Picture 1 (spheres, rainbow, N blue to C red):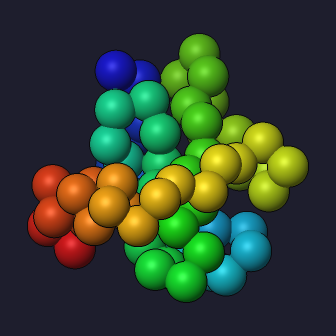
Picture 2: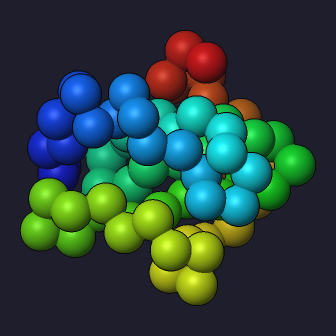
Length: 70
């Protein structure tokens, strides 16, 4: 699992919606249920580019948000 400093997580947002993101595994998930985007973390660096993101299905989004306690 990639390690992202807490201070960085506090200021990162989804570039599309400006929603807060949560760190789960090697991904940063947008908390916006309308877009359900996740952004990869490579070599400890969050890649916050829409073109590099993925849209997850609603079931995965709900699971991740429950795990992150959002």
